[in-house]
Length: 135
Image 1 (cartoon, helix red, strand yellow):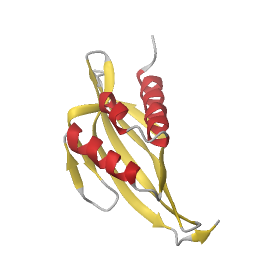
Image 2 (spheres, rainbow, N blue to C red):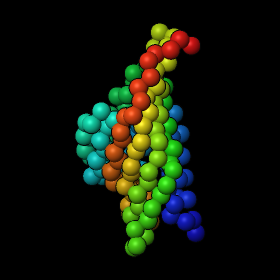
Image 3 (tube, one colour):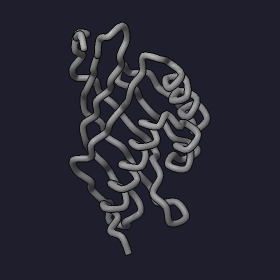
Image 4 (cartoon, helix red, strand yellow):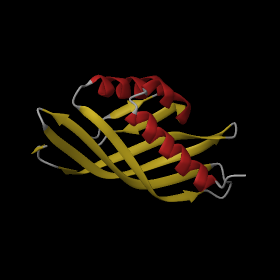
């Protein structure tokens, strides 16, 4: 049996792969139906349909390259069915031969639903916004 923190880290890696593949619909099983996401600029996106639509919209932007979330710490509740994941995130866009990156910290709340870990909420805080650089 996989330890909860290993299972959450594995699911995070899978979501990173799906984002790199720009496959918004396949992110759905990783999200609770009532998921809440606070973006790096403070906007609230509520519900799985809205979160998947937001990803799909970003994936259609030709300048969008990728988001990568890197888990640093996972803490479980006493019952073992809820966890807090803390980590760092980076975003990359490319337009007119220039890269632009943003990065920061995130906190995700995971809960176990029918044996599978899903994201209940995520908070992203933007801490750096790099100026475009030529490639």
